[in-house]
Image (tube, rainbow, N blue to C red; front, side, top):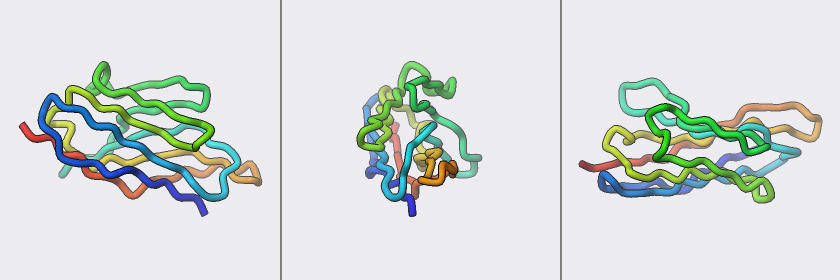
Length: 120
């Protein structure tokens, strides 16, 4: 069993900052790409940022320059530092990871989601 557990989100004022973390646990041989997605009410889930196991990153245009994704491979964790938050960043944020098991089979896993609300 593999679990992805996100930290609590929260309510923050526009212009503020918030850091999300996600811990992967269970039968893990290695982790390839880790990512953060978000889903706002009435909208489709969208990619926010992703990071490979070598540290290469890419971001949605809407968050470039404001959000930073990072990971700690030793701890099987991924982080999302969010700055200059806008009301349109309000969404449920999901952690996602491509996890390789001991049979060297890769599976894609999702966290349960955490609510981030940005007030104007």
